[in-house]
Length: 179
Image (tube, helix red, strand yellow):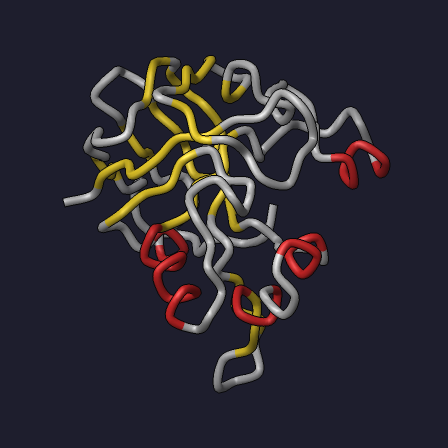
């Protein structure tokens, strides 16, 4: 069963986001009170390039399973510490196709837009961690494991313990790419 492990937000552009008892998603905007909420890009690097681009990164999700793998490699990382808003369990997030809908019991729904592109800030948080969340497969293709991004298509509240219903888009499916 897919479920929410933790929810986090930060009103400022901090790398780590403190855990919350719940977060409220706002349709078309993102997480209420989070620095990355908005209809246009909010991530500093993207604002510098073109502040008028649509915000496809309103909500960041990462799996508890990845955090566990990192822990086994000696990188102790807790929920929210990589900047995610929602930490999940029981769901292979990076394997989902583009436009998958994630639905939560409080009515909130997030449409998956793409992969998070991890940056050098991860190494400032834990030296060497970037090499664990981005790498290459057997064919030499870049593999990103630092979670996925989405937009809010239906507002509502999300809490730890909530189940996650996955609604796949109509086939053919498109693999996730960096947004």
